[in-house]
Length: 403
Ligand code: SF4
Image 1 (cartoon, rainbow, N blue to C red):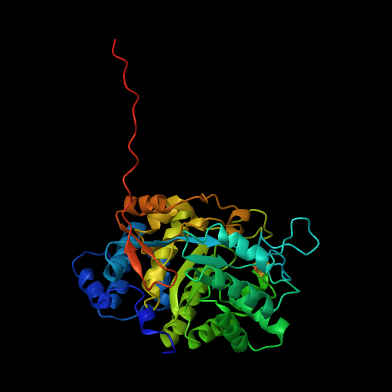
Image 2 (cartoon, rainbow, N blue to C red):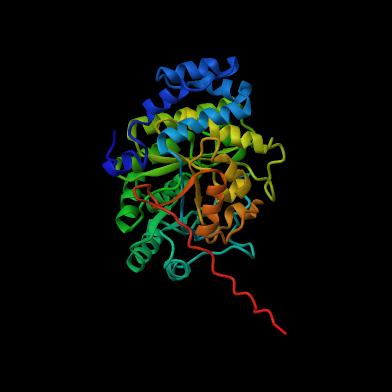
């Protein structure tokens, strides 16, 4: 175990969840198709590659959902989580050109933009009174180094100390390290000292270098992604991890991806949340992408809940899967639907239609419709508050005129 603090280790889980999950399995009946997996889970064995493939290929969807939902219920009971956050992407200028990316621009394009520190803080100021997290990722700006983000984070933290900064994907950290002639560890330490709290999980795509060569050539390797996150954890901070699926990968590569993340989580305890999201095709350059259906999204959420026993939270990222599927995913093993997201551009340029103005009441409604209790969490899953919607304003009817 690395340097992760005690309050992060359970991330809100019931400490006896594993035993409770095993006990719950015996109270249900299961088909022959998934009996080998249920048998393993019943004795506390972990799922491996063949188990993941069996669940993907042969499990009945409703039964798979029921199994994953039991695992989620054992950890979190009837709670489902959201947070109140804003996405601010400081630049879309990027030295790379990943084939799935609709966000990046070259410096010369008309709609390329770069924020100054003042722009960043001004943008945050519009939301800072009511959000608890700013989520910031962006392009690999060829002129930026670690000092650019040190200035942004320290100014944001000085102005709004209550807002947790979750920023920079692994490849951005690698880029800043190269630009600054520092090691990854030195770069991260400087960023944490400046106010960065944790890393989001973006950029994992599929942790297979052959797939990466097709969809994001030039990005960090699979091992570099894992090593950068392990370094974050070693420095005492947490991070999330992701999987972009529905491009050119096989089911086997998806399950191996999960296993590679699980291995890091086992040794550091620093991954708080896994966020699987399907590839959205608009404006990208990946015509051979197989794309994922709604059923496949639900299946992937469920399989990840069952495979990733050392990563507490599974998020249905509503900015990507949409509110409808996000809500359903809460019955398929997900326990979190991300944030109210006051502003977001990356997924929307790639075709997401999830509304940007969702507020707490709307998030709570999605969660309640899925049969769960809505709990607002902080950015790193160490504080939770049950959300009770205020009563709707009374309608004032016009008095009937009485003759
Ligand atoms: S995914 Fe990130 S690194 Fe790749 S082109 Fe887009 S902004 Fe650049």
